[in-house]
Image (cartoon, rainbow, N blue to C red; front, side):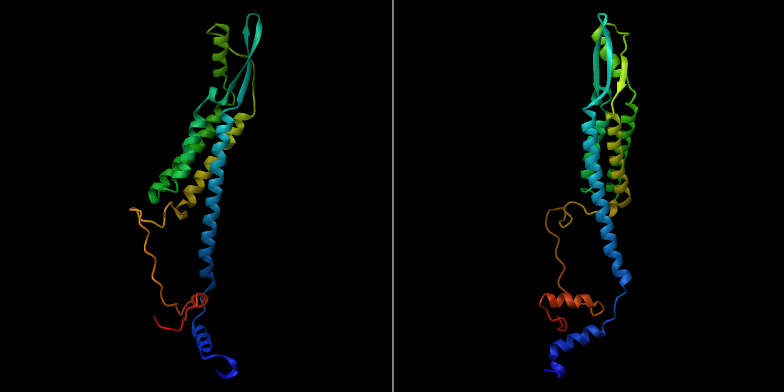
Length: 231
């Protein structure tokens, strides 16, 4: 027992740690901050993309416009859903959702390409939904069929708020694509621990704690190892 009630082994560890230089905190704080930013952008993109696609698909199935067709001296009420007016937003929402999943299956340049496809899908869904806000072609076609007059048009045309909901969903998809373009390079990929042939990557061999990094010494102590022993 060393003077002061300290064991020789504990005293050696204390001296070993004291001799190590203290690392700069700014460099250590940068890595956790970058990882945290990557996780936040990943979560935001997943949420925006999934919600955006679901909103576009839901809104496309709702009634976008109402009107009347003149039939036999009376008025026949007609309505048109988003799918009747334009099927493009829902199709692009499906493409965007597939691209959102594919972002995590590719890396490098492939990830940028898929992120670009996601961005374009969101922009296209929002734009085509906006163009459908005042569209009357679908109801005119229904009015012509109901009246038997090819030149007939719908009367008392009104529109609901669902086209604007579809626009909002497209904007969310667009936001997910922009996040993927900006931060996607730092996101993990599916099966990152495995090689392409399906075999696990070899784990790194355990090494002796670096005397320049005191935190590694304490981690070794937590594992029950002796950091003062040479490997």
